[in-house]
Image 1 (cartoon, rainbow, N blue to C red):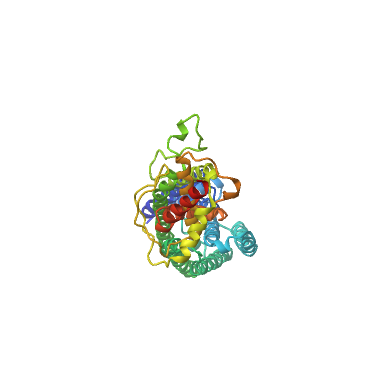
Image 2 (image 1 turned 90 degrees about the horizontal axis):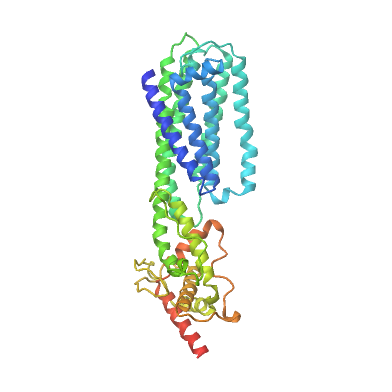
Length: 436
């Protein structure tokens, strides 16, 4: 059994520490509480499995001068990990991640985690302990009341945490993002299996502890078998995290392809090589490792789009936005917007068969029309518009930062919608007639 536990724990530790390293590296480009907590949680989990490896368990005890110190470190770190998971379950919900809501949660739950760990440490220090085989601490010292109390406190805190995390999962709400909600629910299924494995571990460990009170070491083997529960939970949790990463990368690559048309429209080809022309602050950044750092690629492309759109501001006309609103009111949405693969660039309109539909977004359509008009005007070397005709800002520019990517993708999807194209044509005709 020792050899099996050694292999399983080392594999689990490698999986968790590897995932934690990848998440930590991703923090260089994306400063986000959720990502940071995920990196910390899986790194902490990797440390648990490393210490639970029999040889490392014994080495840790020798180094710290307490043979069974792993029996305290492992449950303490497990509670720390569960605290991370608790925080993540709340941060995943936009309506629950407000500072006030997070403070209330911390006020209620930090005392439980800290109190349980402190109480366990005190009980461990008070117990009269000798050496014990790795992962057999509870059953070997089941006769010691301090050891029994230590584990009961740990199990109560662990089960309470699991209960609240399950409750958060069941009430998961992501307003306006049905796609992300569906993805998260699939991931949460794997996390739920990991929590079930932890509950199974608690049940078997409790049987091993209380079944050993009446006889010496009666159920030591069961305590080691119980450790297979967290190992299975590690597999489920890593599948969940890997699934979340893959789904996120897939969505980022899809949005990169969609935003390319908008980028080509607002960034004048060759402008960064023309010393006399306007320059874009950031050049599109593409990773040396294609498909891995898509988040950084996406952020760079979005920065380019914002800068390029800003350089079109001298030609932001009010007419396209007004025309879109008027035409949209006269058109009954009947079909989904179908994306076209023909790019829009250099002020030239591509032909597409996209139609108005349930994906219609008025501010995005208005922004698309304004940018199309402005790109055409710049391509025609038209003079800047008078202040009275110029929009002070693009429609939809007041969206929160968290919705910026979704808004830009929507703008890009509306570039070839017939209503938008017709609005641009009407605006050009009206403008040309007024200036003739």
